[in-house]
Image 1 (cartoon, rainbow, N blue to C red):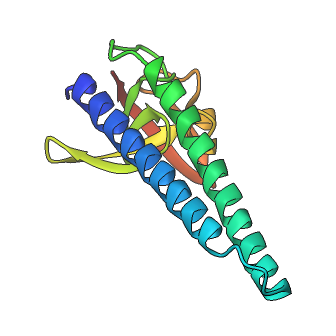
Image 2 (cartoon, rainbow, N blue to C red):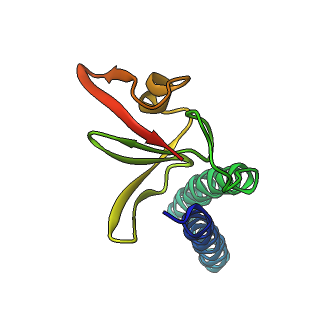
Amino acid sequence: MNKQELLNIIKAKINNKIQSFENLIAETRASNNDTKSSMGDKYETGREMLQQEINNLQRQLNESLNQQSIIQKISAEASGKVQNGALVKTDKGLFYVAVSVGEIILENQKIMTVSAESPLIKAMSGKKAGETFSVNAVSQTIWSIE
């Protein structure tokens, strides 16, 4: 499995998310400027709702920027333990410890990207190949760590 390629896919996904949020914020701000009027309170309410939407988008953008910062620090080097950048194969699936951007299919294999802060990774933290851990009463065995 090419971990560098996996890392590049994740970086591209995050960059696309950031670009989308920046575009949505700009569009929402433009529509917020269009609603300026002296016609009364219902326009004030509309502007407030648009401002709340901008705040929500800004929060999501900041989260994506934080993910980008985390992913920049991850190396594609092989890892002997569960940590950021580790590709962990268990009897239940393949997990890449980085940031959570969902499922990625690479070399015809499904890989779940998982944050180091997730309960799954916390349960397997410090474990090595051959060891077993349990999350939500589901036991898994680590087959390999790259």
